[in-house]
Length: 173
Image (cartoon, rainbow, N blue to C red; front, side, top):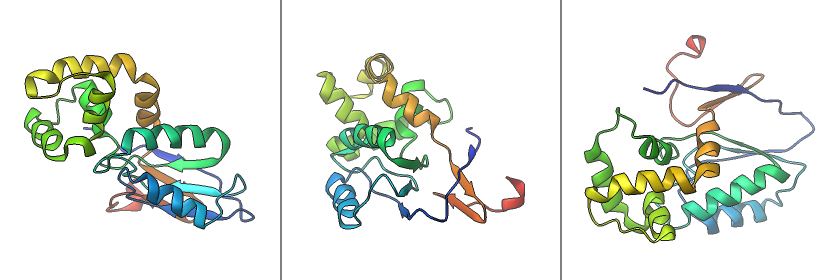
């Protein structure tokens, strides 16, 4: 089981802080919202998790946010849909094969794992294709996996606590 990773961040009072959550691979929504808010390098953007999954633009949006993180102040949390990719690639024993079977085949092109398989030209017709997909993801998507693995689950800044899911007792952090 993964443990929570807490990062401290500095949010200067002079900077505008924009917070969004649950984009779920909707590139148009993400970029339209940032455009409507005139997002700039002078702002702080906090993505509270679930940037990925359930949207056909997940893989592209992930890469765009990775690039945006190099030019802007972007703080992203790992939501329960954002860790799916590296948990699959790593063969996380805490997640049963049946979960991936139902998830991948239910969401189809809206699943980032399917998007990766399609980009690589790999068939994904049954669970028998999973081992080859795991190997291919580890071989071809290292930057994306490293970025996702690096994400914290909690951000703290002064009196502010940013989480995707619930935290039962803050003093236990």
